[in-house]
Image 1 (tube, rainbow, N blue to C red):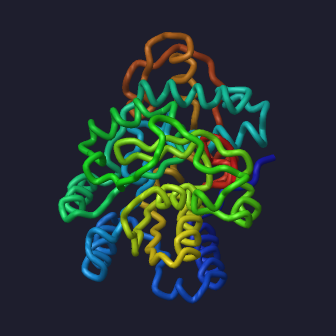
Image 2: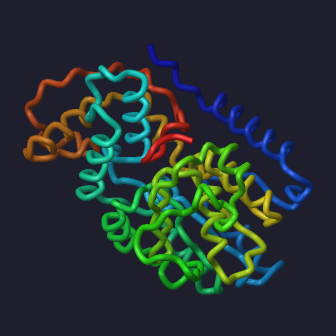
Length: 340
C-alpha cells in the first residue's frame, strides 16, 4: 500500500526542517545567503534587484526551473506532477492500472509524446514581463531543467509561445562543445568545477549528455547544483550572486549548498505557486487522464481532462478513489533520467 500524502502543514514542516539543516550544515559564507519560500515571482525579482544594487548586473545570475516554475502544462496530463506520480507508481506499484509505461525509458517516451502535443502557459501571467525587465538591466538569466536534450524542440516552442526569450540574456560560456556533451569527466572532475568528494557525496557516477543552448540548460535529471557549477566553470563572467527558483525543495537546497560551498552568495527560492493545483491532482480522480492517454495511444480523438463538458471517449477505465494513495511531492524520483 502506498504511503498517505502529506498535508500542507506536514509539507511545510518538512521543508522548514530541510532548510534549517542546510543552513546549519553550510559554512559561514551562508550567512549572507538565503533560503526562502514564495508563491509570488515578484519576490524573486526583488532579490535579483537587490543583488544588482549590491554587485552590479554583470555579476548576478538568475537561474530558473521550467516546469511549475516559469511554465505549467495547461492540463494535468503530461504535467510535472503527473510525471512524478507515474514515476512513483513505476517504482512502488508496478502493477497499477494507472501506469502508462512498464519501464522508465518507456515513460520518457510517453512524456515526449505529451510534450509534443501539449501546451503550456506562464505559471504567473506577469512572469514573462518580470523576467524581461531583469534581462533589460543586463542580468544573465537562464533556465536549469531536469528535462533531457531530447525534449529541446518542444521546450523551446512553448517558451517562445509563452513570451520568453533567454537567448539574449544567456550566461556566456566558452570552450563548450556544440550540441550535447558530457558535463564532467569522472577521472578529472576538477576541470569541471567539481571534486572527487562531490562525485562521492552526490553519487554522480557516469555522466549523461546535457545540452546548453539559447539560455536553456537541459541536465537530463542530474544534480542541478553540480550541473550549474560545471556551467559556471565555462563562463568568463565573475558571478558573485545567484538567485535560484524551483518548485522542488530538493533542487532548491542542491543549488544553495553548491553555491555556498564555492563562496557565491545565493538566494534560493522554493516556488509554491502551483501547490494547490498539485494537491488537487494528487487527491483527485484520475480516470479522465487515464482515458485521455488511452485515446492518444490509440490515435482516437483526444478530450482534455480540463474540459469535462466535452465529449469523452467511450472507454471503460478503473476509477481511482477520491483520495488517491499517491504521495504528495515524493521528490527524490521525480527527475526525468533517474534519481539522486
